[in-house]
Picture 1 (cartoon, rainbow, N blue to C red):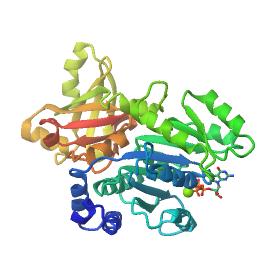
Picture 2 (tube, helix red, strand yellow):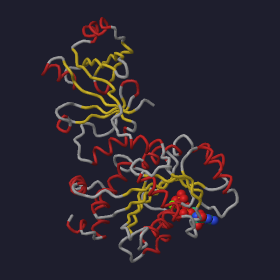
Picture 3 (spheres, rainbow, N blue to C red):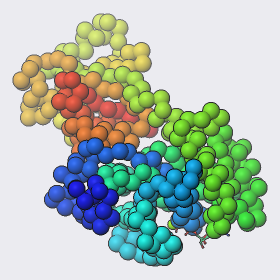
Picture 4 (cartoon, protein in one colour):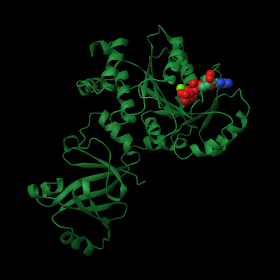
Length: 386
Ligand SMILES: Nc1nc2c(ncn2[C@@H]2O[C@H](COP(=O)(O)OP(=O)(O)OP(=O)(O)O)[C@@H](O)[C@H]2O)c(=O)[nH]1
Ligand SMILES: [Mg+2]
């Protein structure tokens, strides 16, 4: 940790390997990294295969490393998420060759990461590596990921600002990208602007949304300074810059609403009478096998009351009722991006009861936060319904 904190590159490489391998000391190492680190500016760069992401990242690194008012010689970390191969592959080799220009510059640290089979998920893995890089004093982290699947989209949530790299001649693909990747992008890049069709793509993108569109030729570095200016504008919240829906939600603050109050009861049939007399309507009863519980949801304006009846004595609710009797069991808060929230709270050292985001009543995704971190209340964090 001492060497890592001093910025020793070999210590950094070693620490990332230990974390990636899930070594016995990984948890301790990560906790030490998270304590007292200064969070970096994290820039996500995503887009379809071959769009020029790596070439562009290379140029962005150059910009950040340049001395002077702009880049300020920032210490940079690069995480290249390679979707194809678990251990090695062409892309890794290609990236190494491409980044040779930085050989001998300790201010640039590049790490490739396999996207398959990462323990705890891809976003988690990237978040962990970011934490280690931040502990080692990296001020800016560039995260390159291919914008293809949901996993890769999740990675982008770890970033503060996201750049979507597109190229001319992919009009139809823009349509198909829309649902997932388009909504997480803060800035659209028309790369390979030296090619025919750049105008058309730019026009299409401007028609699609209010977000900034920047043209680049990553090969020559053209447009990179402008791109970095726009990226910084997004981060600093300059007026006139429209952010992605995801960034907007992030800015709004996370707890969006009280989703429900969970009440542990001996029997649903016995408990619902009062609530029905109040005029509340049971929206549905459901049995959730993995929690060994039956629930009845009673609709309120904007939120709900969830009655919970144990289906087994030795279940969470069964034990709660046996120990304390019926009563308020948990408070559920609805957030926009449940996975991002899970990663963030975990990164902040908040004690979580669940080791992953789970699926519960009505298909909602959720996890629990331990009362030790919340002022004595069991708090459930629920995502928006799919
Ligand atoms: N003409 C032109 N070619 C470019 C430009 N930017 C990148 N390329 C080329 O496009 C090819 C792919 O570039 P990469 O940077 O590897 O693309 P990538 O998006 O990182 O690719 P993957 O990581 O494999 O998904 C390379 O041959 C680059 O030299 C550009 O602005 N203009
Ligand atoms: Mg690449």
